[in-house]
Image (cartoon, rainbow over all chains, first blue to last red; front, top):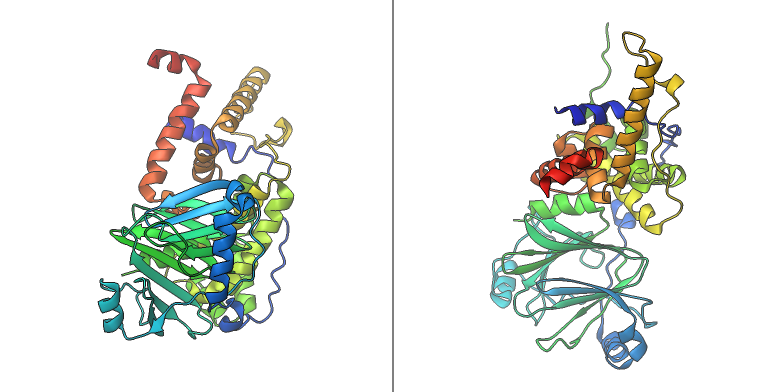
Length: 232
Length: 190
């Protein structure tokens, strides 16, 4: 250890740390897992037209972009305020077996190291492995060929949402955690195709090779990282 | 019959099964470092207290997802650090680090002379001031490594960085700190 490091270490005992409070550790019964995880929302058709219209034609919505984050296949935009539109649930597509999902998506599906409870695939090639009750998933790992075009997934979030650029296994990612944000799927022209959602949980988006991966659940960043590392 | 205190793994296992008392026993040893971690990130004692309390509660709820056999402390600190980061973004008043008064400092083996004490105090003040001048990334990684005494691996987990990144960032931050303390080093680079 260098002299400077020794001096820094010595500083530890010399700082006027605030007194450590006595924390409340009287925890009650741990809530059942199903009730703790906020349900992912399903169903989207009505909203698409509304939100697409808002974003495409509302000068207010367009001009209020504060920050834009991009990884291959995904764009996250922070806006002053989210459009006031009804929110609905993501449609993960048709429930199929793994073989069929892989055939339609065009690649071997990844999972979190355990057999998922359900597998879905959308017509646009987004495949999702779902853990927990499919109507109230605990964890969802969605995957698509993110290199198809830039901005396959687009998210819109307001100031209260945490958007953090991260690195997962050496590749770029975005961690999105906060009160409300929408997700939209875009076509190859960058136009919203069909969906948006209200996400109550946390989302980690990252690239792995040609894939765009999206992990959603009630997770801290550390937990999301740990799960992302278990993807195989 | 002599009974031994339960090991961390045993407490984790009991807590995973819903034993709140085991969880309380598990985290009591980590309260101070959890609070200080939150404080170094949030830079506000009230926010740090809040972040640590919420982090402890979240850890209790998330414990069934804790990987068996993994070290508990960095997992707990990661949750607390995330809470602290959220509060830092909400940005209330931020406190600078301060030194304890000289008479409160632990004494060494031999009582230093008044001149020696003054010099040491001056050096500590300069070191702290230089640390505060660093970028947030640099300051945080050095704070974790030296002010919290976290290992490289723990720092990586708490800050959600790769271990190699912690190593390189620490090295660069130390270099920058050294140059702040001795501007002649900076001049010699030009």
